[in-house]
Image 1: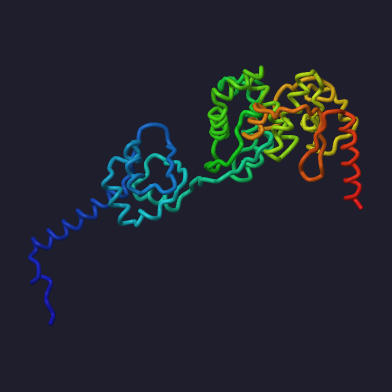
Image 2: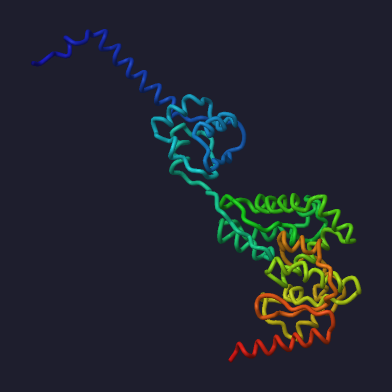
Length: 343
């Protein structure tokens, strides 16, 4: 049976229905497609953390003045199914985005994601820059330049020529493409927290400055990768410093070689640099790497012994001696071991 449309609705009712649906359409258009504007510089940086709920994100967007209504974006999010789709990342929100534009950015748009970056103990500034570029797309040139920028370093209260030794190694959560300043400050602030008043007081009790402790720690780290061996090596260097004996530390010479680390030659030990601890007595001018917590603690708490010499044992560790005669004997043992490995 056919029912005529005119019999279902009167003209006035039909117009009312049209107006109602046009009103709904207009509401949805102006609510979800109309541009929203915020005050301040555009784009605005906004971060969504891992595990953060959609409601939490909305609250922060509203609190920072990026959106004018929490209700409208929640409705848009429900329609869009955005609750479980938004990604944990750092975003740059341009002014004038609609609610749907904003949700589209959070779900599909360009973003900088969090990367886990491991900075191992003993890396120099240059090697840190390489790892950060490889693992988090950080501008390595900017990183190195800023780490040697005297004005920036002075602003941190460090009256030195570089931040070598002052950036704490470890595992960091870093947004990819983060500014070099942000990354350096994160590492420096972690160092500041670690090097607390107790450790500074310990350095003073040893008659060392923090800079000298970091310098010694970097040499200790350059000599061994075994945390359990670090206090013993530290004791050797403390003993040498106490009696005015040259440190004769290979890592300090390696630091000044062009082209990176290699097997040292006799001519290398004659290089005229205050980092050459075969030529100059005492500590070099500054750290040769960013040593890490184990080496810093070893520099502050050296093992108490009478050793003045050590040589590799061929098993990633070292053999220690109190006299030069005893040391030469162990050096010859090591050389014989090396020969046996080449056969």
